[in-house]
Length: 359
Image (tube, rainbow, N blue to C red; front, side, top):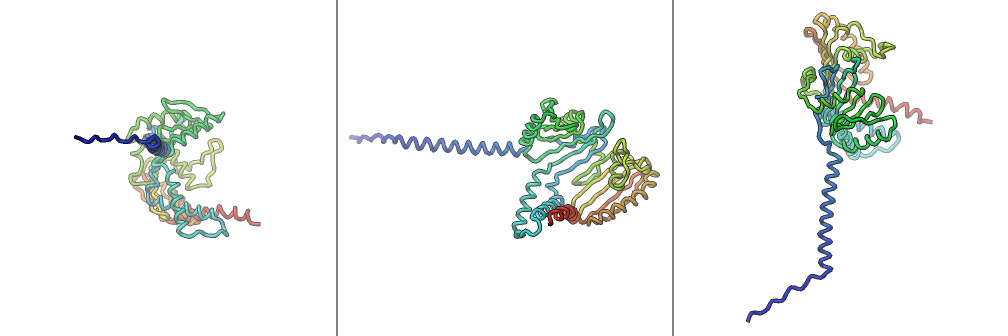
């Protein structure tokens, strides 16, 4: 005779409730973790971005390209020195100094904080308006926080009675003030200082025509920043840099161009920060012909010598090598004392504040 098996005792009601609560709690935890991950991705991910080099048009008067400074060892070293100097200035005179390991930790954290706001790449183009006057248009690929920045700026624009919002295709253009317009082309920030320059710039960026015709005019090499300027913009830069006291035209508010630069056709340059103290700048100027270049070389040599004297007063030493090749004059400048010069500039700004605070 086979013994009969007894049926399992029913699970208590409270046990089923506990299991159900545990399963529900686990689902809530998993759901919360997924929501947190998605929220952080939305917050930090820039989204789709476009190559900023496509910003320049064939009619551009000049282009400046800035590469990923946070990924460059020299730029990072200079940035570290800058952040450290700012922190030291913030402690103020007479305050106790923190231990070295704490200061190093602060510098590291601050450097990472600043680095995340540096764009991966950026391009500035001088686009002509209806009258041929060059207007600045900028495109930058930020590292993150693009969506919250766009949301905050859009809300601020809507609340400003003087600002207005227009559309170009699927994108909103924020006309924030005067001739300044801002647009987020997905994850690419675009800023225009002339309203009519924005729409064509957005079309060029969206089309992504690479390589850009403007890229062929830049100096070859791995630069932190590089670019070229046409005759008017190039002459204006040289006047501002080499003759800072030059009188300005009352009507145009532009520096008067020295007659020796009237045959200038183009200026190309490259900047490389090699370390916190050292940097390299190469500039090449093209003239109408070899004779004009040879006639201009003494004028440039004299102005560059004066510029070196002004830089040495701030602790920035330099060695300059120039060469003449046909219609082009090339300058290679080695800089030393970048962080030192930065420190002196900050000291000069701190001293007036200290004198005002002293009884």
